[in-house]
Image (cartoon, rainbow, N blue to C red):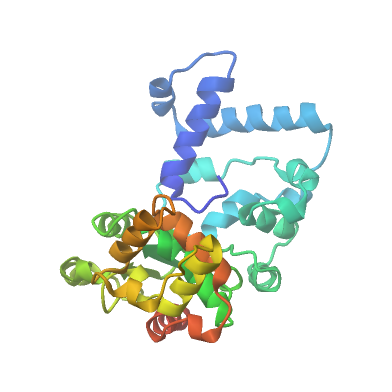
Amino acid sequence: LSRFKNPEDSYPRVFYSILSKCLISPKYSVNEISKLESVKISKLVENIWNNSVLNIYGKRKISGGINSLKRLFSFSFKNIDKNIQDLINTNLNINPILDDLEYDNAPLNLKFLIKTKNITSNEEIEEERKKSSLLFPIKKLIIVEGITEEILLPVFAKKLGYSFEREGIYIIGAGGKSKSPSLYLKLRNKLKIPIILLFDYDALEISEILKNNLLKKDKIILINKGEFEDILSENLIKRTINNEYETSAPIIKEDLHLNTKMCENLEYIYRTRHLGEFKKSAFAKIIAQNIKYDTDITDEIKNIINEIISLHK
């Protein structure tokens, strides 16, 4: 529930699951649960959760009675359905669990809850995010087409002196250009925060149509040529492959110009050099490990990151 997801999707799914799997009596099917009043669902889940915590941890007070989970949504989401708001308002005692977590090994959403569980001021919460690079509360959302941008944008930004985690910038991979518009349209009236859509150049027509439905707070960024792999530094790509695979015949710059699309060149190199199957996610991860110099960041990537950072700053 502390992940950055639309509460209208996540809360019913989680609460219905708890009731259908953990309630001894009465027994409900998911369909029956969906017909119950939201206040009753909230109360049942609260009893199951808090009694379980009490049995496991003994009597520990809820620090200040703060609903830390509720706070996550208050910063970013709006226009929440009343029934879902009833579920969000459920007073779940999560503090004993947070107290037992190893902070250094916890994901960022739980680090946020650990650090802010006793803070009541919104301003102090924002300060803690910047101080500890917690990512939460989210201040901007970037919707990207694929995994490459999702992995590499924060790494390039950090090299330029920006921390997405400190600035509260969250990235969601839509899984393709055709899925980005529908994800945006689903979220645009539910989020208080700006949404930035990053499209490959072949989504020009889609982006032009979407502009007619874009809210003033939001922005579309279009890659000037090709896709994200096409605007990576060629020296960075060459050095990454040669460092990672140490082939007997290192690749040279000309190997990256056999086709017009960089991904086609990389697929050919991987196939002919017997480097295994070219996968965007795996390649992006090794690229991230080899970003060392300012020249590893092309001007277009710099411009994209600067547009993201400067939007409604």
